[in-house]
Each structure stands twice: as structure tokens, then as C-alpha cells.
Image 1 (tube, one colour):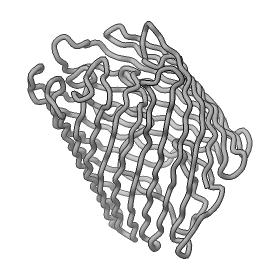
Image 2 (image 1 turned 180 degrees about the vertical axis):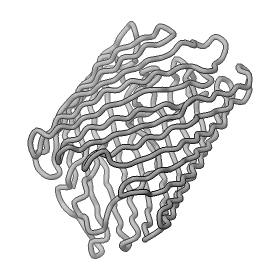
Image 3 (image 1 turned 90 degrees about the vertical axis):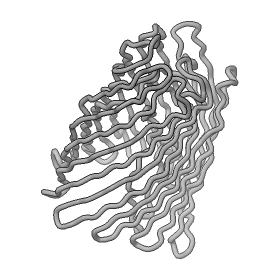
Length: 401
């Protein structure tokens, strides 16, 4: 279910101090310093209108191996980010974006989407609390098949934590939902709709500055709207990990353990269970202001697109290199191998290997106004023979007040 590189619904802390009035504003995934500071109520309320215009090209809009169709699209985005600093220990944010994409020829791919994201954070000397509710509609390519399937995703989450002298205790409870708006070649628009409640418990021991040894347990359940194809399941992921410094600037985290899911029987598959290594390692090194490199390696059990379980392993490398004070090169490369562990009769059972890369540049004309040109490449190897390759390019201009 957690397949979307651009939209990952996870509860995160908001690190925004009341005194800092130069926090960047995100316009889609473009981060810009605001052009102006619209503040009210003794600077406790900030309003940041934003907009984006763009044009893009996609060499394979349907992710096919043959009968490939290329098309050009126009993009218009408008939104506003609201920040309310209700005292030194409370922070509220509301981010709203409306994103419209219009294809010149393939009108069935037109998308009127966007997102709304509301969050609250309380930070005290020893305790933290937070809540988040978010909704998004997008059509990013499915990592398993490369298809651009419109879908709605939503999440509601609450979290809390307590810091003792050297111990940290934290818990997060969330409920997420995904609702597909179109058919895939693997499922109809209703078959893969699902609800996913989850609980995460975390215990950590701080042994040095920016260093912590911890253990984490995640328990979740996936409940599908129909059992025509996919099986409801119960999962647990138990890991131990460590985060710390590699050098003065570099940070790393590594965790490993077991990822287990048990699947209920339905009309097309028997009851089954899968246990595989659960692993995640990250490194981030900002070697200078405006330049950094990051690496993520992972292993997890997820629901397969053809039914049953899959074991997903992969890595992603991203780089940002500052050319000038207001210009930077950006790039990245990643791959994921999706290995079916259980399945249903008649479904493709071979492994899937998908790769993607991006390369481009960003140029800030002045505070609050930026340009970005980005080229992308995707390649998928599918067991049903539907291999695909996709090239893309997008030029956008973003404005943030």
C-alpha cells in the first residue's frame, strides 16, 4: 500500500520555531523562501499564498510495452499555507493546494487534484503531542506497473512522546485510506480500495548528542472494501535501530528486524503468512550549505498488486549540488525489486524490478520566485511481459509569498 514516492502519508514532527520567520514555503515539492511576510495578530498568524505554472511531456502516458502514446500536458497549481503560532509551545499549520493537469490529446488522463494537510504540534520541556489530518488526490505512476491511476488518499493520526533523563517513549496511532478512481490492468477501481489502521510504539535510549538506540513495534491491519481479489491482512514489524552522527555534518540511521503479515482466506486464495527481514538504513550528508547527498535502503513486506504478499527491497540515492547561491543541480536514482511471496491462481508470479532516475536544475530568480527543469526516466520489468520505459520532462515556475 505504501507505494507512492511523491506522497508518503506518515506523521512527522513540525520543526518550526516561533522566532524563525524565514521558513521556506513548499509549492508542490519545490521549496522556496517566501517573497513577503503576511503576518497578523502580533505576528502569530502567517499567510503564504502560492502558485505554480508548468508544462510537461510524457513519452509513455499509459506505461505500455507496445502501442506507446506520448503526450504533452499543462499544469496550474494554486494554494495557501497558513501557520498559527499559538504561544511558544503550540504550532498549527494548514496547507491547501489545488493542482490541475490538462493533457493536450489524452483527455481521460486529465486530473483535478491537490491536497489539504492540517497539523498541530505541542512541544514542552519533556513531552510532545501532535495530530494530523490530510487528504490528497493524485495520479503518480504506480511503482509496480507504471500506470497513472487517479486515487484519493487520506490519513488521520495522533502521536505523543515523553523524554526522561536518558529514555524516550513515543506512540503514534493512525488510520489511512486509499480509494482508486480508475481501473488498472490488475484491478477494478473498487477492488483495491482499503482502510489501514496502525499503531506504532517506540522506546529509545539517548547515549550521546544526536545519538539514540531504539526499538520500534508497528502493528497494522489492511481491510479491503471487497474480497473479490485482495485479502485482508494483519501485520507486525519489530525492529531495533540506532541513529547518530558519522561526522560533524553527516547523520545516519539504521534499523533491522522482522516484518510479518498474515492473510485471511477469501474467494480466490487460501489463508497464508509471510515473514521476511525488515530493514531500513539512511544516510544524509550536507557537505556545504545548499549541497547534500542522501541514501535510503529498505526491505519490507507489502501487499502485491496482483494479490497476496510481496517482499519489496530497494534503494534510492538523491543529490543536490549548489552551483551558485541561487542555483543548484538536482538528481537521483532508485530501484525496487518486488518479489511475490503469496498469490492467487492465474496471476503473474514473477518478480518485478523497476528503476527510476531524475536530473535537472533549480534557479531562484529572487526570494519567492523560482524555475525548475527536471527530466525523468522510468523502466519496469514485469512478469506478465508488460515491460515499459518512460521518459519525461517538466518545466515549472513557482511563486510563494
